[in-house]
Length: 377
Image (tube, rainbow, N blue to C red; front, side, top):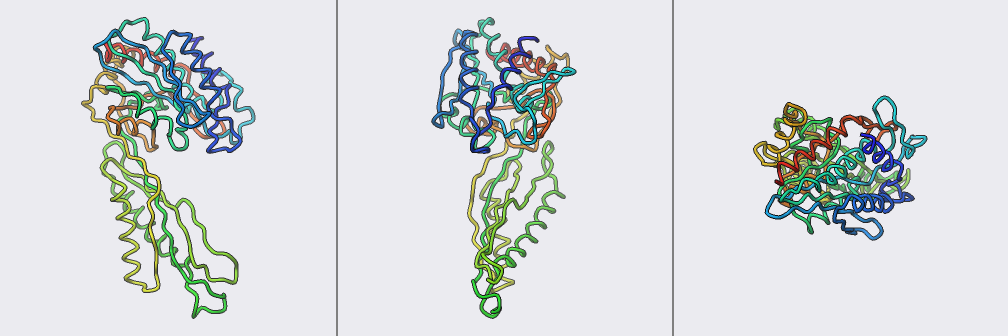
């Protein structure tokens, strides 16, 4: 336990804030160097893979003797900014909790993966265990996207915080731009001007109706309902001019089975209805970034193996649940690697006070090892 506490403390002490979120942040280079050196010291085969110059992913492989299944353990090194934290990278242990930026999201899970992967080497399993410490999960997930092109596995555990629940599903998201088109004119000439911002008001009212409909009709047993919200809006130039454009960016959280095409069709349907009822209404819809939801069948081998490991470590199965946020597990699943989430307990992801429960990190370490022994034997 002392080794695990020290490892988490060392990881938290390294500033790995994502520079796409905070432009002056250092990124993942220092923590990647630390993890690579630690894994080499533990006897793992280590590879450095850069998906962004200067921001390396680290891959540690515990090679098996051959003929067994491959298990992937995945965790991200980057964190969000410090927010209102006074000493974000000075880890403090108090009452069984370790405090600091990234302790919960997700350096506790990273440390558990590292210790488990090191312990696997002593097991002489037939299959490989691959540990990937990835960059950029907090922004565009370019790390895991790159590694899915280079490595494959028969199952994966993403060590995001889950309160020791086994997560089989999470929502995806679709970002869309809606632009209403008006006509610029002097504020004194309403006969000439068309107010694009006012036209966007009609869109916003319909989006609220759609969101209320989605949330009042839960359809997924683990995730409940989809949702929709307006994220960013801009328009207008000056007080005395009718705005000729208004741009709205929305986020639609999706359930398994919902596609970007379906979401875009929903919004296009709203635009078409408004155009029929108002001949001066003009709008365009543009697709943005999208990420697929996760849904792993309960009968998948990785699920059954984790539950078998839980029986040995905890003497009872893990609760099965879904989470509302998106994770890299969806990218692994899309690459043909059945994936689940399993990680420690704590609080304060992206908040001003963040901590991880150290005993739960120990449990995760034992769970990852027990799963590897069963899955890769």
